[in-house]
Length: 163
Image (cartoon, rainbow, N blue to C red; front, side, top):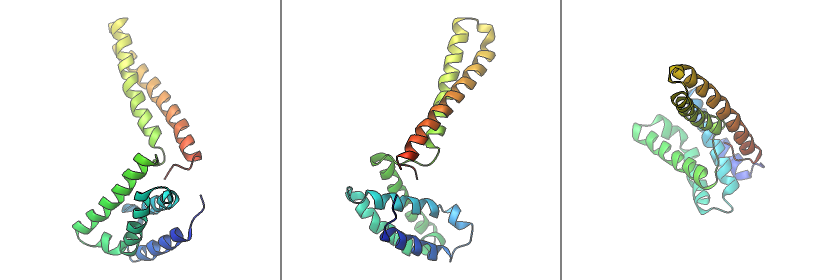
């Protein structure tokens, strides 16, 4: 993905504001995620009105980053609310997800389905082997979920739809 002049300016402004913060605040307040979202918003701004509006919001957030993050609780919540609105839009409208999103999701679903399948098999066959069936279902579900999630995450990454 080619970085535009707008994004480079925004990144420079955010880094300058971040230099006023402590070193660990960059990661803690997820400024890096904000910059990745701004890059995706810039990419989709040509075809999406919400992304066009979000570019202006991103500029305002970058210019006042220090004030938002080191201000009172209301200003921090306002920052998080704007970031969450952009994140929700990217996820719902443009299907942009964080890294390893599908590994986590499919692992959970695999474990749930594996446990249910293991319990069903034990109930229908030999009820005395419930623990072994549950363990077997858990392991198989987890492995299958992680494999399918890894495949889906790889497709998302190759399509450029990962933060």
